[in-house]
Amino acid sequence: MLNVEVLAPHIPALSPGPVCFGRVAACDNGLLEVTGLSLPIGCLCRIEQTQGQDMTAEVIGFRNGRTLMMLLGDSVLLCPGSRVYPEGRPGMVPVGEGFLGRAVDGEGHPIDGGPPVRAAAFWPCGGRRSGALDRSSVTRGFDCGVRAINALATMGQGQRIGIMAGSGVGKSVLIDMIAHGADADIVIFALIGERAREVSGFVARHMAGPKRQRAITIAVAADHAPNLRLRAAQLAVSQAEYFRAQGLNVLLIMDSLTRVAHAAREIGLLLGEPGAARGYPPSALATINRLVERAGNSAESGGSITGIYTVLADGDDENDPVVDTARAILDGHIVLSRAIAQRGQYPAIDVGASLSRVMSDVAEPRHRADAMALRALCASYEANRDLVLMGAYRAGADAQLDRAMAMQPAIQAFLAQSVEEGCSLEDSVERLHALISPAPS
View 1 (cartoon, rainbow, N blue to C red):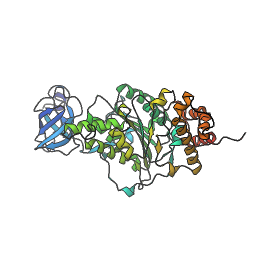
View 2: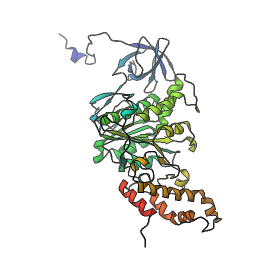
View 3: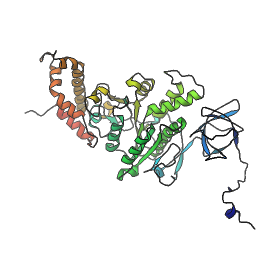
View 4: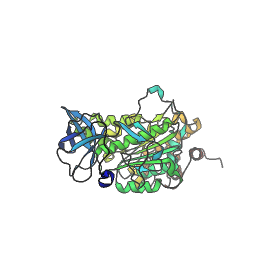
């Protein structure tokens, strides 16, 4: 009697039921049309290849009796008529404690060289919808470790805030500072559409040491398929929702929200959706709203998701559709200025343009008064900066401007902070008070 397992170990175990499969009928710029297979949107499928490795595709729609799919990888060597098999759980993503301390891609596969991750549970990639009254208010301050933000745009636990700037102004450096100094039970990093070099450097910096066991990194580089980038963002938010349901306080850092919108735009245009706002179809901007709204406090579990999202302003345009949409849905924004960065002040936070919509709910009255006073001094100096530099201003004409000019070195020293330096929320508030109300001599 032949030993089948020894002679043919590649033969899969027989399934007691019928095996459903479809066939690739067309491929147009990454969009696949599959016949003979009816599947829900979001389902993953395996495309059998006679040459090379099998491919993975995701269902993104259906039209005229055909299922529309998009590959999660390259379409090289894809053959017409290839068999397509459904896999996994449609609309669900793996989550759980097994991801802590690991770096994975948009499908949950490890990219850190470690063993496969064992998922404790599965979570809907679109989240579990809850009513508006199921979200509790933001009432507790959040320590991000950055003095200028803690003092002048104080964040709250469960807040959603954006870091908005053009390219090369210091968003990634500010994210590093927040990641090192923030106080949270779980930290989830979502690196969407970043350069592969930055991904490897980020993992080396933040996925080491004692903090590694409470951190998860989900990264998809810029050269990957748009639907894989979008799945990475959904996986990151689903992980955060899972831990929030356990009553934990989660910090979700997504870099960047703009590249998520770019991925959604590519998918929307591929499906034939017309570009509305500067080439962005309505579904791309709606994707931002859906992702951001999933963060916040949970009244049921007592947990929270504090979301920090970087937003790339194309060409430093603050009226870019993604920037405008993010500003409208977020609970605050930190604006980084190229002019301030060129002066050598980092982080290059524009105090006048940055705000936190929950600061009035989490800050003490004295703290709010000090922050308003410093904002007024900064605004007065910036409004008259050209006059001062030209020597056209005469001292004594404006008492507030005189004070702002005298305090400029101290204000710049307060707003500047090195990457290695940490500053707690309490220390930031006290140093702000000492700056605004110096002790009498």
